[in-house]
Image 1 (cartoon, helix red, strand yellow):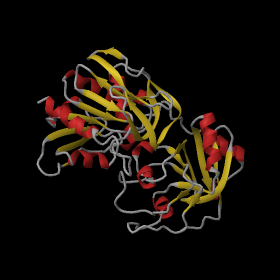
Image 2 (cartoon, helix red, strand yellow):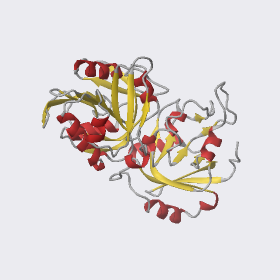
Image 3 (tube, rainbow, N blue to C red):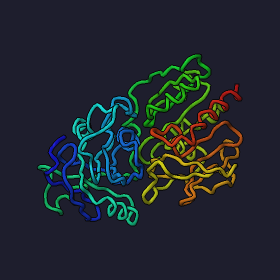
Image 4 (cartoon, rainbow, N blue to C red):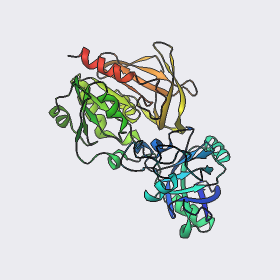
Length: 374
């Protein structure tokens, strides 16, 4: 484990400074500071492309207990721009561990900070909202005003087009497990590794396409369905994926979207998006299905949301649609469903690793939608 005795600081754009000790790489990093309430799954969080250009605060007090392994990455790299923890584990203890979290952060060039009063920081973000911030350590550590000035020079999350920065450069195929039942074109807006695995387990061959894919690219796959992945950034900037989604809806190809993909489908159906005060990030967020009243405990990671009224049908260029799910905590839209074309989406993560798994059956629903469209 690297020396953590050197000072570091988390500096927010409103001038608040949280002192701590250097953790991970030394230097400076900038992003939107957000908090995640998950008590497990930090490796999946760090490697989730949806966290691109965000500084993640872990509300769980001790992080790093299970170290780092070679199996749980959700992508090929760590995507967070900074990492904030209270009490990092001194020694990892898990039979799957191949290294420490600290070493993984160093290898990934992620500037982190430990020893932070994360309870106070989280309360501050809940009251003031997510905002730009910077983590400073080593030679980058300087006087407060200079660090605040550096933070204020960094880009805001609102208006940022980030899916293009995390998407695959070229298409690739993940085969079905066993006999192929369906072929799906998955638009990579920041897709996680577990998504094609969940599809493969249901006999689905997944053709992962870049975020710049056109309707011709999709049709060339001859898909039974189209999947819109999770991803980072402001959905108001995703005009290309929205246009593609409309083209898919016009052809009545079965479509399923999650997280960022939910916002893309919502925009294609005519809904607006807006930025949440501090977002939903964690693995314990309740969602209510309007049709059944059933509550699912879900994994979420989003700072933007769709504007809409749960259960109330609305008109779209493709017929009627409705807000199908909502969060009882704040009324946030958690899903939409088209009533006249085969398309639905949810704001949460049915592929979530390390869980929960309440919503995993949505992949079965997608398969049923494709089966019924044949």
